[in-house]
Length: 148
Image (cartoon, rainbow, N blue to C red):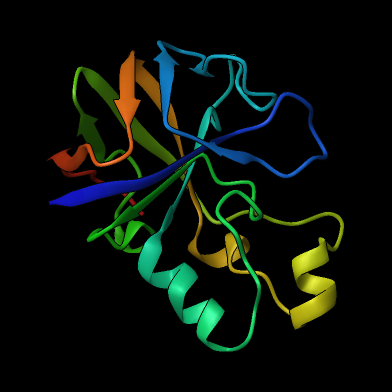
């Protein structure tokens, strides 16, 4: 079982996401008012708190949202889960669609640290069922995926 420690959104693409206390996940869209939401397979991005803390331990100043992540949770190693894994949080249900991503431009984190964890540790999901999520909510694996 995991626990949500941060929810982050941004109103415009190309800007860092900022933490909010709660957010509304909209079915087949993503977070309400988030610039990266839409009718595609990367509606919500997730990072494990443990991976962020490891990165910070190497001297990185990395506030929540700086990697473009929507959800930060402790207790789940997202990058080890297979595609198709379903995650439940309250009424909301997510399905993992992609592990990692190719960065087309080097972000400020990469320029400062020489690396960024989102390309290898970040995962993406689509919203199967919407609902409000809050900091402190449980995040559970509802069903295992089948492919990597």
